[in-house]
Length: 124
Length: 448
Image (cartoon, rainbow over all chains, first blue to last red; front, side, top):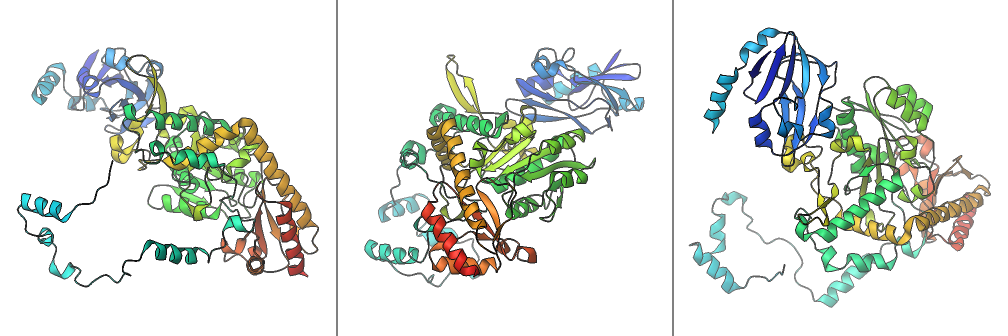
C-alpha cells in the first residue's frame, strides 16, 4: 500500500487498482470542526480534477477535487452520522471514498510523504 | 440608535479636520460635465396641515378594498388581521431590531423565527422550513433552482395553471442559469398530462394547489411518478389559509413547498411587502436557500436560538451559495407568526372552513344567474366564472356601483380569447351576505 499527496491536501492510498482518498491532517486543522461531508455516489465516473466532494465546517465549505480519475466503488458511510471522524482520524478512519483508478500514471503527478511534508512546511 | 441632524457648526468642524474648505471640494473627482448645475424641479416646503390635505385628496381617488364589496384574489387575499398583530409588531424591539446575525442580542427575534419555521413546517406537512423569502413568487423561482441542485438535472416543468406572474418570475430567475423551464399553456395542468411530460432530464414539476383558477387536485400520483425518475415535486400555495382545509402538500409527497404567506397577518398593501414560505424534507436542507434559525444551547447549557447552516449562504460560500438572498421578510414574518399563534390550529382550521363555506354560498347564488356559469368542479375560496360578456368591461361597471367584483382573466392572459369572458372571484371571511347579494343583483342586471 502506497500513499500519495496532492497540493490541495488530499491523500490517496493505493492497493492494486483501487485508491482510498481523504483529506490530510493539515486540511482538517485548517477547516475546524467538520459538520458535514457530501460524498459522491457509488458508480459515478470522474476525471482527475473534477469536483467530487464537499467538506463543511462551521465556518467554511470546501470543494474537494479528485486527485485521480476513475469510478467510485465505495463511500465512507460513517461520515454521515459522525463527520467529526475527519477531524479525529483524517488519514485513516476519516476516509471519504474509494475509487477504481482509470489511469495509474496520474499518481506520478502527486507527492510522496516526504515531498508533502516539505510542501506544507513551506506554506507556513 | 438616535438620529440627530448635523448643524452648520458640526459641518465646519468636520471639514476643517480633513483640510477641506467646503463640501463641493469633496466632489472634485467628478467630471464637471456630470455635475448637476440647475435646481431640481421639486415643489418647495409645505406646512404639515397642507401636506396632509394634499395626500388625503390623492388617497380619496382610490377605492380601498375595505370600503366596498370586495371579491378580488388572484394571489393576494383580503383577510381580517386582529389588532393585536399591529400592536405587537409596532413595538420598538421588533419594529427596528436589525438582522439577527448577532445571536446574543437577538434572542427575541430568533425565537419568533423559530416559532415561525415550526408553524410553516406544520401547515405544509413538511419537515423543515426556512426563515422566509421575499414573497411567494420569488420563493417559486428559488424552488426551481433548488430542485436543480438536489436532482442534478436541469429541466423544470411548470404546470399551466400556475399563477402566470409566478411563471414570469420563475422564467426571469432561470434566464441566465443552466435551467430549462418548460412552460405549459393553461390547458395543460391535469396530473396525468403532467406525468406524460416527465423524462430522465426532469428536475421537477411545479404545480399550484389550489391552482390559479381555483381548482384543487391530489398530486400524490404525480409525486410518485417524479420520485421514480429521481425528480422533485414542487407545490406552490398562493392562499395559505387553504392549508387549513386542503390536504397538505407534504401529505401528497411534495419535496419542496413554497407559498405566499400574505393572507395571515399581512394586509393587501397594494402588492407588498409580503412573505414567502419555503419548506422541504430534512434530507434537502443543505440545498435550501434563505436563512434558517436553529435551536441550540449556550456555554452554560441554557436553550438559545441562532441562525445556522450558514455555509449555504453567500457570505460564506460566495458564488456557490444556494442563493444570493441574505435577508428575510422579518416584520411580515413576525406578523404571520403572531396571527397564526392567535388562531392556533383550531382557529386556523375554522378560518379555512369559514372561507370555503362562504365561497360555496356565493358560487351557488352565482350559478343561479341565467347565462353565468361557475367553471370549477371544486375550489377552496376562489373560483372562475364565465360571463356572457367581456369580464373586464363587467368589472368596470361593477366598480361604478362600488363593487370590486373580481379579477378579469384577460388582465393576465391578454392574448387568450378563451379568457376574455372569465372572471376570478375570491370570497374570504370578510365578505358578508349583503356583499354577496349586491354582487349577484348587479351581475343579473349586467347580463340581461
